[in-house]
Amino acid sequence: MSDARIELAPGYTISRLIHGGWQLSAGHHPETTGGAHLRAGETVDELLRLVDAGITTFDGADIYTGVEALYGRLLDACRRRGTLPPQIHTKVVPDLALLPKLERRHVEALVDRSLRRLGTERIDLAQFHWWDTSVPGWLEAAAWLDDLRRVGKIRHLGVTNFDREQVGAILDAGIALVAQQVQYSVLDRRPEGGLVELARGRDVALLAYGTLAGGFLTRTWSGADEPDAELANRSLTKYRLVIRDGGGWRAYQHLLASLEEVASRHGVSPANVAVRWILDRPGVAAAIVGGRSAAHLASNLETLRLELDDEDRELLSRALEGFPGPTGDVYHLERDRRGAHGSIMRYDLNALADPASRTSKEDAG
Ligand SMILES: NC(=O)c1ccc[n+]([C@@H]2O[C@H](COP(=O)([O-])OP(=O)(O)OC[C@H]3O[C@@H](n4cnc5c(N)ncnc54)[C@H](OP(=O)(O)O)[C@@H]3O)[C@@H](O)[C@H]2O)c1
Image (cartoon, rainbow, N blue to C red; front, side, top):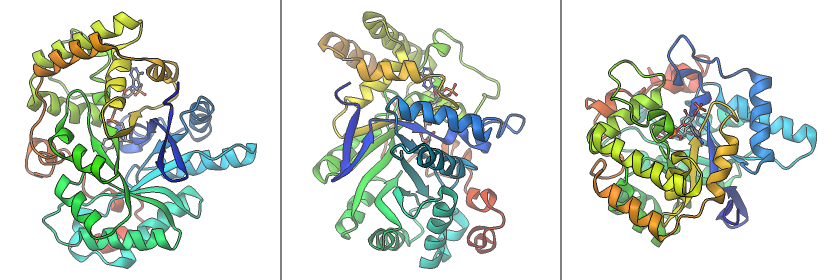
């Protein structure tokens, strides 16, 4: 497991497999099951198992209801047992309605609220998102976050879902960006359209999400017909659209069969091959793999042991030719709020996540 960890910035090391926390948030599952995975004590115990196995980095967001507080309990549990703290990454996602009137104090209040929920004095990595880049203000907001980094509330600054040009503009403004979190997988190779080159050239680490397409890149879906009913969670709803617009169900099934073929050569699962493929891409520092528990821990550790050889890579690159994936810059499709990808997203979760917060509900108006 020689590449199990990576230095994201000088003196700051993370695990190359990051546990994704969206799946732990109340809003990820339909109303009927929402929040069922946030059984505080049990969930913290599950997350401690990941930490002990070397998956020490966790991805959350201020809009993943309940997740920052959960990570706060994880940090507390590590403190109490006297072990090293995990690395906690969160996101700063001002609500869409707030963007035209966003001020420095709003950004600071969002960060302060995350710090309170996490029970820490400094956020390890704050990843900034701006829902609509045609609304001016994102560069200023990134600079305000960089100021919060300078005063010590944020250890490192990242962004998520910015196009290549905007990442370049943020860097050109002298903002100390260390990472961009972006959708990148065998199904969605849009970062290869220019972002990867920029990121590598300017030392911005890519943290890839969607690496299992919410579960579509696992054996569960091998040979399955295209679902036409409502899916079990928001990830599957999202990645079904990626499959539809990236090549269609048949092409996806063919790609899944190729992942299985490579997996069988090594005695692992197609999920392992999909995540290994992304970890091997130039510029990718880590793969975020979501989960409700530690149930897939043993399998995910296999990914770190897996080494793809030339024959595997050849087989996979032929399979990828048959699934071109979505086109355009990394968040182009999603940014169209009336389009299929944009219309399934929720743009007001900071207001909903903490109705008592003055930052969100009142100001988001
Ligand atoms: N920045 C953004 O806009 C953005 C967007 C989406 C996601 N994310 C981040 O990325 C994370 C991942 O989310 P995602 O939606 O892209 O999902 P994903 O990681 O592609 O897939 C997660 C699903 O895979 C299953 N799984 C995990 N390991 C497995 C294994 N070894 N074998 C079989 N199944 C396995 C999990 O199962 P269980 O449900 O059984 O645990 C879960 O349902 C999120 O939690 C979040 O942190 C960020």
